[in-house]
Image 1 (cartoon, rainbow, N blue to C red):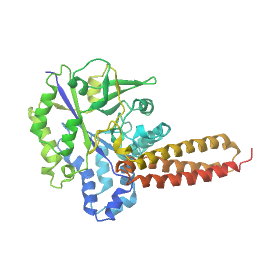
Image 2: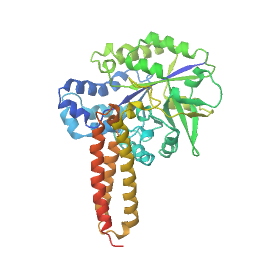
Image 3: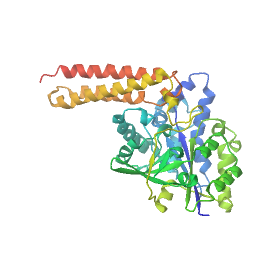
Image 4: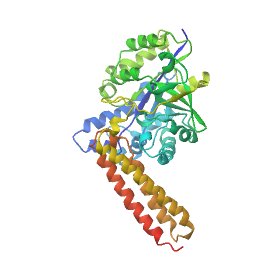
Length: 401
């Protein structure tokens, strides 16, 4: 049996404005639990720096809240946000990038992908203290091959994908398909795709016994004749498993520390690893394709995006995002053509940039996750998009040729 490696990842995300919304509602205790979930990881790594190998993604909508002075002041009696961010910056956690406003990439206009991707990098560098991010976590694990050139253009080396969507070019056993990275190519660009084990990730999210996990990894990889990489990735602040204030009964005390202790004792049977370390040691050579799809939710399997497109209003909202994005591109082209003739180009530029930010916010996946109930949030942002772009267009029309 070849060596078995385990890459563990946690996704941290909050809808824009959600922390203050919870604080101002009857859900203050939930806001506290969520913030403690962000404060806790680096504390749980103390004393385990030699063996701990952890990946984390922070959505841009969450980072913007953690950066907000109002949020920091409001919750100063709960956590010191700057303090735990500084601990993250000093840690050996492998942070991976994601989309700024947490869009479902395959469902929003490709013309907006680059901004969602590159704008997150600037924010991530500032708050997480990394100059480069090798890996990319697609929001909602929603991936399509067309994303590859954008990810490569922004410096990413690998992307996490759901193992269910890997499409091999030759016949493979299931364990071979799930437990090794591959190369995927699109439009002349290539990236490494790292399959996430769906079933083991489901267990990681809901609560699991370290002994069961150890046995399950052995059973799933015992026929592998190659160095296996088992990747599990879940939300890191949802549910009592992660929010439990009694640490010994939650993810960190009941599962994570025992796993690391067994590894130190030589009884674990697999090796905690950073994906970048594994790829350096075992670079992939085989090519696959990846079918479109997202991760599974409580109600849907993810491959048809029903969670975000299941109702007429959800579909209508996504249609309107595409229409607004096309209008933005039209106004921007007009501005670029008439820039030299404009007396006050910065006023117009400001309107266009502000409109684009509202457009990107409208693409937030949370606006479409909860059936029809939150789609109005997207429409509110789109109203601002049209209002600002109409002003810009009026100014452009007044420019004399």
